[in-house]
Length: 154
Image (cartoon, helix red, strand yellow):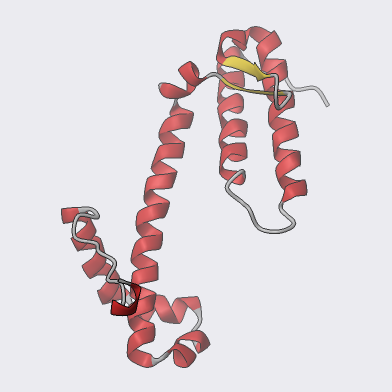
């Protein structure tokens, strides 16, 4: 299969593939290694082709890993980096809100009852809690988040 891209389209493809590989690299579940290796191999192949097609100043080669990657200078101002940073930020806050809301619900109804609920049922029962956490974090970030250790742990 042969595809032809303009330089702009190739730049977009490079960012898309690199973004996908970066997000996939966070998967540390057992058995993910093979899929991760496939993502990395495809990223390397696309970046190598892009390097020879006029985007060489944006692509570096890591001798140790024997893989191509986007240069740090390119990443710093790129849409790729904006997307990655926004993904990490949104994922953090959403997970924090959901996990705290689920914890609070489980404390109220009991863990066994909580485990029997579907995700949809949990979200329906935690709407008010989630809203309260979103408002708190929007206003104060993590400034008022604290971990209270049991007395036995000092």
